Structure formats: C-alpha cells, structure tokens
Image (cartoon, rainbow, N blue to C red; front, side, top):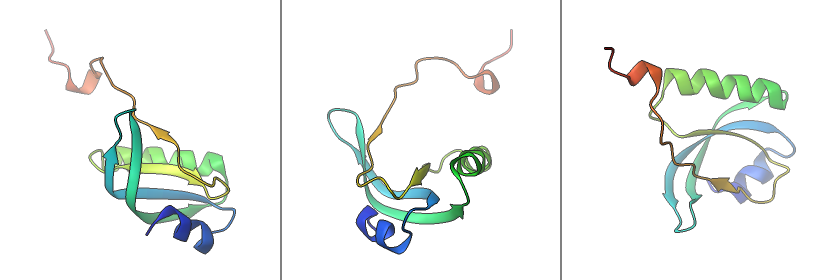
Length: 91
C-alpha cells in the first residue's frame, strides 16, 4: 500500500508500519514506496513500545510507528557511527 491509501483506510490512528520497498534520497530522507500495516495501536506510547518489541524481535526489518493524521511521512535516515555493545568484541 501507499501512505495515501493507508491514511484513508486507518483515519486518525497510531500504526506500526513496515517498509516493504524503500529508498533513500540524496538528502537522506527515506521514501517508502510500498508499506504494510503491521498493527494498530491505541495511542502513541503503546505504538512506540510495540515498535521497540518488534525491532528487537526482527532487527533486520524496517518498522516505523506513525499516526495517520500526518499528511506525509518525513523520515530522515540517521547515520550510526558508534559501536553497539552486543556487537562489540570483548577484550
């Protein structure tokens, strides 16, 4: 689905979505071409918690928590330059 279709199908709701097809623009914005609705949530706090749970369970999938009141998705890709503890090699 596209964002405009999702907004029509789920008016004024918090959602967990997954990017099925996406690309990064030259100015580091994520353009989501195909989106799947994974779950509806009762509020933003529940959406954020559910996002965290899904991200831990499926770290390679691209999830977002969003509200359909937003006309457009403005997702900026951040570059990670640090080392995560669970991937660091012990001394």
